[in-house]
Image (tube, rainbow, N blue to C red):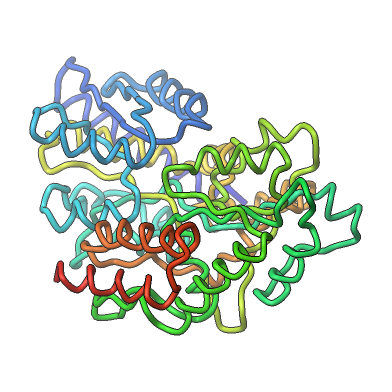
Amino acid sequence: MRTPIRLPVARWIVCLLFAAGSSIASAQTVVTFWHSQDATEDVIEGFADAFNAQQDAFLVEPRYVGSYQDSAIRFLASMRDGETPALFDAELTLFMRLHAEGVLRDLSSDLRDVPGVLIDDLQEAMWQAGELDDGRFGLPFHMSVPVLAYNASVFTQLGLEPPSTWEAFEEVAALVTTRNAKGFVDVAVAFVFEAQVASRGGSLVSESGEPQFATQEAIDALAMSQRLVEAGVALPRSFGSVDQALVDFVRGRVMMAFASEAYVPTGERFTATFDLGLAPFPREAGGHVPFTGGQLVVPESATAEERAGAVAFWSFLMQPENVEAWVKASYFLPVRKSVEADLGPWYAAHPERRAGIDQLDVAVLRPRTPEYAVWQTYLEEGIERATMGGMDANAALQEVQRRALSTR
């Protein structure tokens, strides 16, 4: 299946590298790549080593620079210091902000010679994520969707199935709550709340880019969290306690947690005392789930040689065998449609890992409004006020809406 796809792409990469090597003489262009993939840092290092070994025009130097929050601060600072990387792993909401500020390179012309067979094989929604204002500002590599992680050992012991609707979720959360463990950990993270709203058929931002944080779907989602916290079924955690929430789950203090599927490799390292279960995010009829992850971007300041190196490395990452290796190591979704088919036997052997790919048909892009990068901070603070401070859910969301409108 791969042969008609791999060979044209491989030939194109070889031609691109030869042309680049000829144009820049014997000088080797360093392509610094900043990313936030701590759980798969060694895999990315391996990709860079393999790419560097097969050509001598470019030297890709990957560097883990912290969480998405840390890397955003560091990238913005690098633009002032003049040490901006040639390739950057931009979280989806930061991606929108960076584009609005005009600091990203439109790669349309740099991709002109990329074979159409590669582009046509990309998942349409993931490719669309990098398109803004009729330009190509992002390249897909690492995108996922939220999933429900649960203590499969306890669920099996109790004869329970992972809940697929919100009514079932509330019931199951109460059933698995004991004196020593809560039903689930409720973390004030924007993308999880987005998913709770989208899965009910709502959206936090209108199609015209206006904030709408106090819709009925949003109120229902936050009221449910507040209700379960007050009933002693949910353990609330602030945005700053994401790592603690992971500890809560792996130590058996909570039975369920919501997370991006890309967090699963980290969780698997520590769940030695029970079987880790994964299931699609609870959803009502007509509901959706948001993509998470980011886009690979090139700053406007990058030289022509750095841009060529970044595109060549991305094309190398898109080779089917590399996409397949990346999915197996990271749990991110397969960017190429042909690889999704190739992964069939692997998914069959690990059915729980289909929790993400089974939601691909209902996945939608996160809010595309640049201001949302700020608004989500207001949202997380509002969630904390409701779940940890006892503020009425409607009042908390109305406050978020007022703050968001004040920035328009």
